[in-house]
Length: 336
Ligand code: TXA
Ligand code: MG
Image (cartoon, rainbow, N blue to C red; front, side):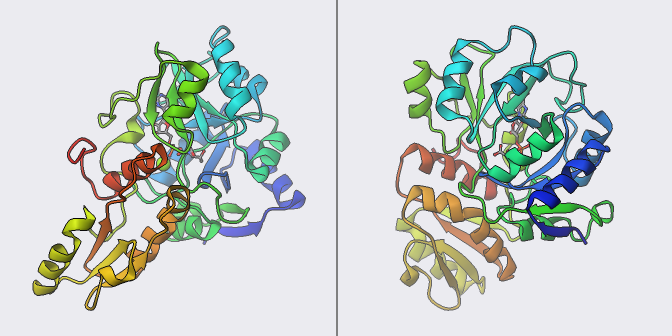
């Protein structure tokens, strides 16, 4: 069983020692927990892919303390004044930049690409850990591939509880993640820069700093493999339903003997035999709670999870909706 240890100077030093000797550990960031290995350690990176069951063509994000350390894994002229502007506005924080990589970085961490994704996390435990290692740490979200991302140390432990190779995995517990959904991923190798994954750093915020920014609906594997349709999926089949269709849908399901856990905004939306889980009406609170509530819904062991489509259209709601579509395996353009 993976070990949870409260993050403190001692356990952070211990985790750093494991990383330096070629191991893998799990650690908190402000978005979700990550499963980390040293970016420059190809064998340890390989172990991360194996533990996650992650497809080899899906590259990892290198976590750094600052722009200076980011540049140690980037091509010489990759970091430009626009990157400086982004970093001074959004780092440390949930913005990931895709840039041309340095030859020092092996092909495993970047899935054979000529680019690498870099981000400077805001969580103090992540920062202390990277500082203690003194090098970038590559880390995907600490869930089994295709599953719901973890926002607590206990989620990580549950994800890997029955994975033999993770029996001695060290999980630094830094509490529940602030943001709750993964970072915004921005491709800076194209002009205009392009959002590959929506997150809490919104398109509007990026446009203020950069001017024109592209945000196509990304469903294909081509640009950013982790944005493929079936992602963040609970085990229970899940569907996304407009509030206006909720009553009729739940009546049909009940008539068919199908019991649903309903992620909705009003407890009255789901009467017996269904069960309501009431979600926050604020976009940021919803994002914060989403993965934990999906796990709760899964754990109830009902036949189906029904999610009420959030009514708002702020950019944070759009990032949330993007995760909901993937959790319910809908193609992102199917219901737009
Ligand atoms: O908030 C986050 O970003 C969390 C925490 C742990 O930092 N990490 C995370 O990692 O969500 P992961 O591996 O689950 O998602 C990384 C995303 C994927 O969609 C991946 O395809 C994309 O970033 N990505 C990584 N490197 C890339 C590259 N060189 N080019 C394009 N997309 C890349
Ligand atoms: Mg992930």
